[in-house]
Length: 263
Length: 214
Picture 1 (cartoon, rainbow over the protein chains, first blue to last red):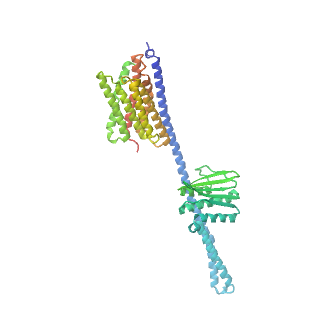
Picture 2 (spheres, rainbow over the protein chains, first blue to last red):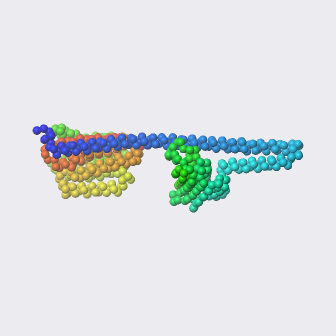
Picture 3 (tube, rainbow over the protein chains, first blue to last red):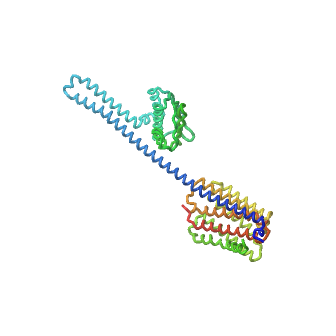
């Protein structure tokens, strides 16, 4: 009698079943090991992208800082410097005896130049840190800013808010800069006639909503290094205060921007 | 499988418990809490084997030892898995599983098979539940991606042992009471079980031997 007939078919079936179960168990283990390795590799590559992106953001903030310094240097040298040089010439002429016939004129011109220099200093300092934020507070600064934009650009800018949680000076400044960036983008590229701005307090924190009715734009994917400078500026400022934001846009229907600042 | 080979494998299977035992003793000072529990499981297996052999030599039915062993081993392995699975699976669910299985094993011992017969229902259900817990552990590990060096994770080695042993043995447990065709058939099935048991003991030994990643 051979072994097969001695064992009997039921036992053989059990043996086949055991073999199948064993193969399944080995398959589960193999799948687990391969999948785990693949997931780790994926996570590793995501981390690498994230690191590269953070590096890029940092690089961008250095570039922005340098550009800002360059602009201030140029403001000081080209505008304020030349005004002060002119003032010095006027004052020199006032000291000369031959200046007597048009003394009053020179004195008037020199005074005007000093006034211009004062305004120029005010403007530079305003760009560095809006003094309104210090003196009037966040909401009034935003209101003033909106009014100024409306007057200067012939655009309908509505600003609504319910209540605002207490914000740190850093948060106020970053929110102000983000708004400036958004408005600049709208004025430069969107061809919009209307801007709506809303500040809201949510149980989880503060929300800012910004909307224009311009031509819209193509939103670059997240963590994309080829974003425009404006969006990068917004991103680095939002990162600085741990805020999250989202752009939405439809062609010819404008752009929506939502920013959430956690408590 | 020839009769003599089956007997040899079964003998080796009994002695194979010494591998994790020696591994545990050698590393006793460095064992983590989880490894100590795995060590306890090894001691439980050793106790079961020794009592079983002693009773068999004395001519006393030793099958009731397996009824007790099944419950204790299941509770201990669930407790070990609990260390890693909570809070992915609630502690209450796992404790409920232990209680539920104990009740089921009592039914098997006193109603279905009887205390003097092999507890094939309880063993099969225990296998299915333990395989499920191992798959849950694998799933959780993939979800969290916390463990990078699996080869340095004691629970991974224990899980491999449990998965292979119980996948292979569950059908043997389930049908062992019905296979009465020949002595060779029974020896073949239990011989195969012995191979799985040796594999299980080797995985216990590795689980106790490795130095877990901090």
